[in-house]
Amino acid sequence: MSSFSTAEVCDAHASHLASGDLRALQPIFKIYGQCRAFSGPIVTLKVFEDNVLVREQLESKGEGRVLVIDGGASMRCALVGGNLGQLAQNNGWVGIVVNGCIRDVDEINGCDIGVRALASHPQKSYKRGNGEKGVSVHVGGMLIHDGEWLYADSDGILVSKTELSL
Image (cartoon, rainbow, N blue to C red):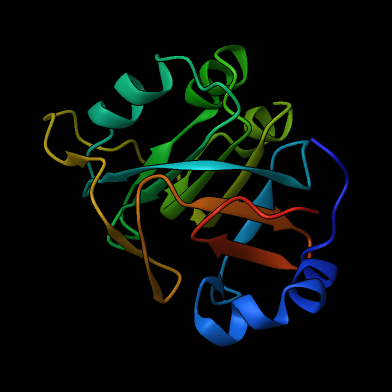
C-alpha cells in the first residue's frame, strides 16, 4: 500500500465528495494497532454483543481487506480482542473498524494492523453465532456497503464506492 493522507484524498477527490461517492465517517473512533494508515476493500458484518461471526471472518484470508463491524455501537462488551487482532494480522487483514468496543488494548496495539473502535471494554462478548455477513451496515453516521473501499489514517476514515488512485 502506498502512503496517503485522508486530507489529501479529500482535496484530490472533491468531486467524489460532492457526489457522495466518497464519504467521511464521523470522527468518533479511537486509533489502535501499529498500522496508523491503512486502506482496502471492505467486508461487512452486522452483529450485536456476539463475536462468533467476527472470528469466523478473521479466520479466512484477508487478502488486504478491511473488516467493518457494525456492533450497534454497544458499549457493554468487546467484539475484538488481542487474539482476534493477531488472527487478523496472521491472515492478511489490513484493518478492522468496530462500531463498538475492543479489549486487550496492549495486545491489539502490538499487532501490525490498523484498528478503529469506539472504546475499550474489559468484558467479552457472547458466543451465540448471531449476525449477518456481507450486508450494508450503519457505522460512523453512514451506510457502508460490502465491497466499497476504506481509507483510514490519523485524520479520519473515508469510504469510497470504488478504489481511488492515490
